[in-house]
Image 1: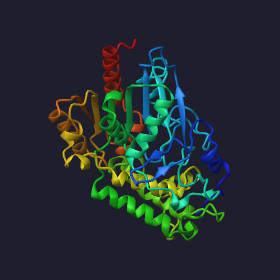
Image 2: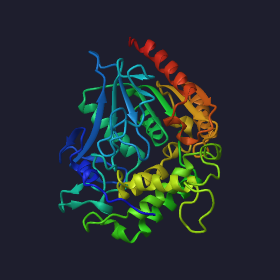
Image 3: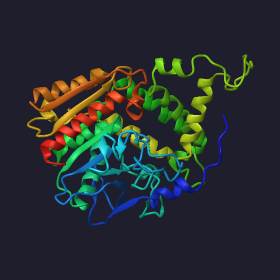
Length: 389
């Protein structure tokens, strides 16, 4: 596997991103679950649409593990279109002609929000592993601080898929009176042992790369590109399904008609995974990958409520729509049903849609008309109740 040299652009996005930026000083620390008061810190975000006069039309989009704030605009590192243009934009289910949409890079990320690649003011060097371990709740606290700064008391909706869906659920539990509606897609209230295992393999691939240098690679002028690429290759398989892999690649050869009897990428699927690995290291920080995967692993929404999800959602005024996909084996429909059962037990308002799809976990990022119809119907109904035209 060969790797193209990294440009300086990803590094420049860490402290001075090509997006809006909210800074919090030494007197405004972010209190983290690890017991650390992080200060100073900053959060990078994008907005789309216009906030109405009574500030009732604000929608927060929460991104997934390797996503960022560029949900509906070109990514400044890759030049590619926003990662959820199928869902967010003019005339889309989250209509930016109607709603004021906010998307922020998570704490611990590498696209402008403070994370392990950011400069530690105490040393003048990147934090690396001196950065405190992050949780999903920390991510939500940081987002809430941003929403406060924007002068928004209550969000019309919080929406996200995968890790974004975890944040949606945490928002509903941590700030129930600030969330009118919630749309968690392909999500769960805690990470399974299998998913923790997949993440651990990825983290070990990063840390086994000699260029990781105990996490100090940026200070030493290198990057664990090979390890991070392998981590991405392994993770990407979990986002797909056997049906999708068979339909797209099967056992087809890549630019050849017979085996080469070597360890080159003979099969199309091998070539595809290598491309995914190589392209990923151009836009993502290896330590951020360690931190954000760990945040997902630690997530357990019921843990502080005696193991009861129903207690976590007790008396919530938030209305929910939970969406899953039939071929998603990373966050299977059973995870979504557990959310729905807990919400029912808490007497919450909840709708549930299982979308028939062979695209696997990543279906929430793709063209799925049934998902769009469900999301649009839920959002439109909630908007009518909220009095949003």
